[in-house]
Image (cartoon, rainbow, N blue to C red):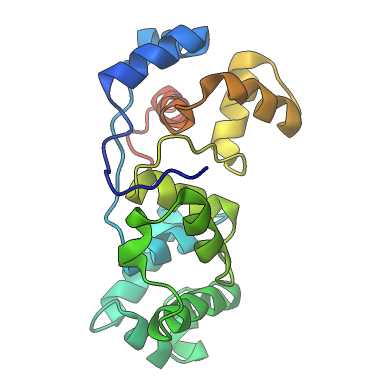
Length: 212
C-alpha cells in the first residue's frame, strides 16, 4: 500500500458507511441493532503509543490503571522521564518487566532520533508499519491500533484483535484466522470502518460504551 496519511479524515463517514453496508449484510444487522459506530480516535505521539503498548494482552481497565499509576508517578510522561525509572519504580507503578523493556525501547528509539512520530502521517502506510515494528515490543496489533486510532488509516484489519476475531466468528460462522482474513477481503478499502463496526457490536452487546 503506497498511500500516505497526510490528509487525515475520519474513518466513520456516511459515504464509506454506505459502501460497507452494500458490501456485507452483517453491517446492516449491526447498524439496525446499535446504529453506526463512533469515530474513535486518539492523539498522535509518544503518550498514546505507550498506552497502546500497555494495552497489549490485558483488559483496557487494567491497562488504564497501569497507565494512570505511572503517569501520576512521573513529573511528565516523556521518553526522558521513562528512562529515569528504575526496575523497582516500574514495578511500583505496576508495569511488568516485559512492558518496562518495551517502554524503554520506545523511549530510546525516539531520543536517538531513529523514529519521529510527528512525521508518520506523511509517510506511506507500509513505511509507518516498518518503522513502528522495528521497535522492540511493537508488533502488528500495536501498529494496527496506532494506524487506526491515531492516523485514521482507512483499510486496516487487526487480525490479532481477539474481540474482532470472535465477533466475526459469531456473525459469519467463519472459524480459522485464514478464513476470516479471506472473508474480510470484501470489506476493502474500508476494513478500518468494518473493524469499528465490529467493536461497536462487541461493546454494545456487553453494554460497554468505549474501546478507548
